[in-house]
Length: 83
Image 1: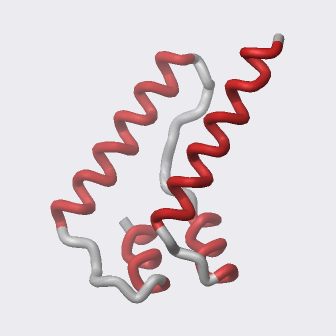
Image 2 (image 1 turned 30 degrees about the vertical axis):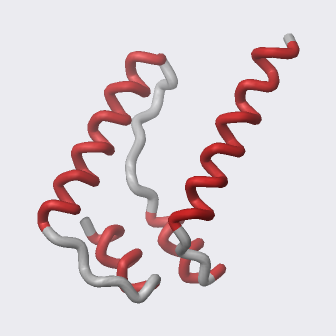
Image 3 (image 1 turned 90 degrees about the horizontal axis):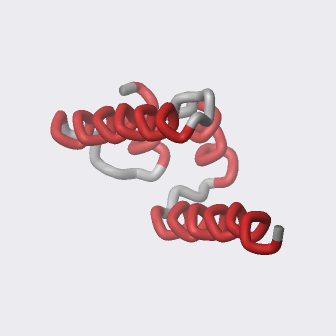
């Protein structure tokens, strides 16, 4: 919960509402279940390191995060397609 509040302060946004917090925690739980089903061996949680990255780079754009996620997904498929 602290990571959500810290991130919102760093990007000069409103503090997260209880609904936003519950959706975020629910998605972390769903991601952990999917990680277990796929056998990754680790769960998926909010990392404090990411909050520090926002503070250092001053980049808190949702668009940048989505673009980075798409880029990483595409890179993960290259090895599966070429091999």
